[in-house]
Image (cartoon, rainbow over the protein chains, first blue to last red):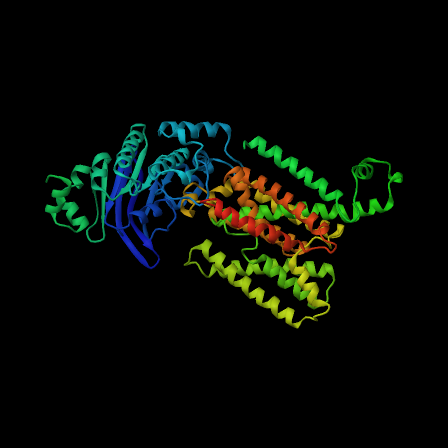
Length: 251
Length: 329
């Protein structure tokens, strides 16, 4: 059953159409990867889905209901956003950072309860970073920060986890660790939408792959269908032989 | 330091500085005097001690307490919501606007109440102007453009103040303008306190109640929004509250700089960045700082020193020390 449905969606900014005729579904429990060259609209798509950018056409349905009909607060109980790891302006502790994920569930004047602190600690435990709870977020490495931001998103108790190039600033070991985390989340029943620069990441975890290209529009299918030398060569505007050579992809 | 140790230390220091500020002065009040004034038989109390305590010392000490806490709270809120540790309560031009209003009132020869009213109105008008202009700069980063507009409009007010100084009578009006701009609590009366205190408290209340949610404004707007926070609305509520606090403080005490900038930094070292603990800590430290500096202002020399000079002389070097000590503010 589909959790989110994109119906002929056009995304972009008032004076600049980025991509149109986006039509695809994200089914409950699957990992969906967005692939495309720089500037093809992956981030724009994510911002539109989160309700931060108005759509230029079509509609996005969450649970069969138009995204524009959801309040920001309701939406935050369904969709959680994992940004790329950043510095953060002030030195919040890891635990405080994770607890911020509760804001949609708390009344305006409330702050997180003892029970919610326990939940946050359990999430850190689950992600294997319980020992970082009292550390200051800016003092962590990129890989650790990314895990904290995932814990914060999970603290929202969402139905869909949206990750914007989560592996972009990570070293090779942390990239593998991250993909492993995503795989485990999927096993626990989470639905994931992830944009990535790396076709191999999509091949490792994706149930569904969406290719976004300004020329050929949007194509979608299983990882095996989409991640062919021919399609990737067209997507990134390189020769097919080079793709095969670098990625070792057949067909 | 643990949270409990910090709390006990701060409460202890606050009580000590309160007691110090009440008892020390041109007319010293001993502990015996104080207990008689507060709990003793009214007839047995020295009349002048009673006047000094109720009419002069107590209003002044309460004003220092309240204004110190208020400026520190406003500074904490502004730094958090503008994601910038170099921001202070007058960042949107409140103090500059209040200064311009007060200078104009002095030039026009208005009474003390008139000066306060003009200062208050000037501060609020400048912030309103900054916010209106911000509506026309939607293409820029909203936080950065608010701060830049504040600086530009503040400079404009500075020019206006200089113009008024040129026009003012150099023997009567000019000294009053200069002293008003330097800030001080020497003219505080019971009446001033009873008008400003409710406004200060009304402004502090939303900052206090929303302090956990304030944390989320330190994140990039898109992230906070994705966590269900109405970023724009929350930021406006906090701006209005912090502005009300600053304008009320400036209207009765003049421009007291540095408290709102330095105190949140000191406290971030003590309690961390979480506003649930940071805001109460900043309010306590702000109150202590102003109680102590105001006591110094009226005791270290035979003439009363303007408070603004002292807070700047303590605040600026302290700030530089913090910058050198810490890798990150």
